[in-house]
Image (cartoon, rainbow, N blue to C red; front, side, top):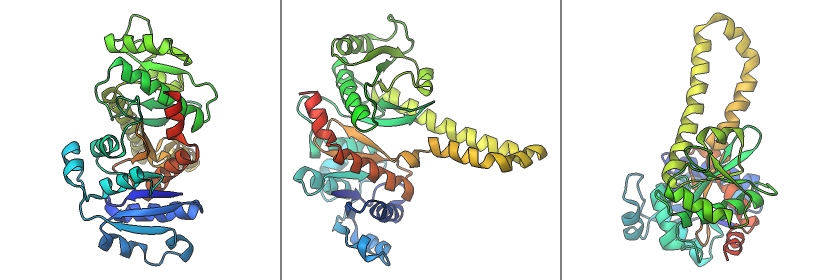
Amino acid sequence: MILALDAMGGDHGPSEVCRGAISACEEHPDLELVLVGQSSDIEPLLAGVSRDVSGRISIVHAEERIGMDEHPTVAIRKKRRSSLRVAMEMVRSGEASGCVSAGNTGAIVAGGVLVVGRIAGIDRPALGVALPTLNKYTFLLDVGATVRSKPENLFQFAHMGNVYSKKILGVSEPQVALLANGSEEIKGDEVIAGAKTLIKASGLNFSGYVEGDDIPYSRADVVVCDGFSGNVVLKFAEGLMSAVYSILKEEMGHRIMPKFGMVFMIPMMKDLWARFNYEKHGGTPLLGVNGIVVKAHGRSKAPAITNALRVARNFVLQNGVELIREELG
């Protein structure tokens, strides 16, 4: 299995990306990676790698790079030799089974649509993320690909989320819900109400509306919303967990007795942080495009890159794009 990896994307550049790529190849013997970017920056980072791993990592030179603050559509159109665009062209041509990037989110979405192309019948793509909740994962989409949605878009997101929850997360009969400002039937604006009508008639296991505070309690397996709302929910959840972790450490540093108790709490705190840490869960798949595209967090270090590659690999093994195509056929 060959995956293209944008080596220049993200806040940390090729150093962390290359470390993550090496780790992924060590973990998955069936994986071959193409690192796309400036070869002079990448080659030194692969020095000293074992022959088994180095034989499964190659470099495709791309002299341009799309910055995190560039206009997405303009950049993906004009920078034809950017690492992100070249990686996506490999997916379109069939040279790679999928691609992974920690780069500019908007450029990844634009490239997914303009370079890889949409699945027939899909109007807008969606980024989905599996959120760890009380006793399982809740798949939230969209979290940033389509900022404003129509009822038909949310209807398509629901079907794509249903497929992902079933085939990738292993939920036998996912409960699908719409994110709204209340659980009552009268809640939601005309877009949410229109989507509810479509989803109820679709045959999905639709459970109605959920509110933001329902998500941590696993009251739905798939939660559907527009990209603006989903991105706010995701960033708030990430920030809240990071803040709670920092506050606990700070308070324990100020008090004598908790310092003794902390010795016993450290393993629990580490497990709790690992459960909610974005690095563990890797990448966010861009659903609705005619190929496998996975967006890693912009701050991704090596472990997050490794896990993003795992997400892409699993999606390839499950034939995820074809399953979505059949679902919406």
